[in-house]
Length: 391
Image (tube, rainbow, N blue to C red; front, side, top):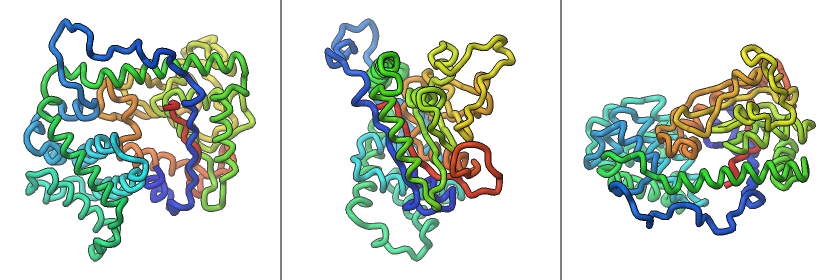
């Protein structure tokens, strides 16, 4: 995220402090180790379709001509940004932690290039995906570092490993393209999605039980609150603001903390992504939210300890909900991951374009040094805790 956020804010990546609030190890556990999930060995009624990743299947369904020999190049001719999103999303699925930073830097450069030149002439000449990748990386490098940039500047084992991971991604896409472009896409990736849904339900129940029994001292609440406190302590002149990015169940936890359990905490910008804060409010699951007398006009007051609230959802994400018609001063934004019903919920942060758009939105928020309104002329914000669904 910092590879995209830092340039948008006009600060160095080294000035940003990013704190991850991982709470999965104090959330749900499965006594039979997910034995309740279908494993594919059951007797079937219908035709067996090949299992694949949703991000690929649905992207290729939108571009049927890409089931040929160079699917990524074909997608790029329609949309270079879509091709970049697809390639990095597929490549990131098997990336090692040591490769993540380099992949992010390459993605940021590629997205910047595509923004500057969305339809480069050289695309019409490319008929091989490896040539496409080489050309994209080369042109992106020239745009970022100048035409005289040396190969050594971009060398090193980590960079070579990241490029190798992208080349592997090309091979996986090419192998899966013919299958992904056929019928039966509704069953693509079901196993992984099913597992994710079961974990989500388990985490919801675990959190609510912990809150009922222990309140603010519940294990999950404590982990997330401590990350927010760490982010607040990390404020500097170069990194003045606290931005919380919360995905899925993480959004519910953060809202519960800021509105009730730990209302002394504050942030400049809250970003909820693919979250259920709206439906939790409708179901009366937040102690601080009072049911409306007239739902057509009544709104939950904006939190005084949150400067701005940005909520992002994919219309295809069945676990994502809007908040603007329930909460005052909450901003809803549509974003299409292109991953379809089965893959949208977990696809947001795999898309380079998502990080670019998020950075631009956050950069437009005012700087306060603490939560609450500020002058529009203040310096832009920088990032801090990122609260995920716990997994």
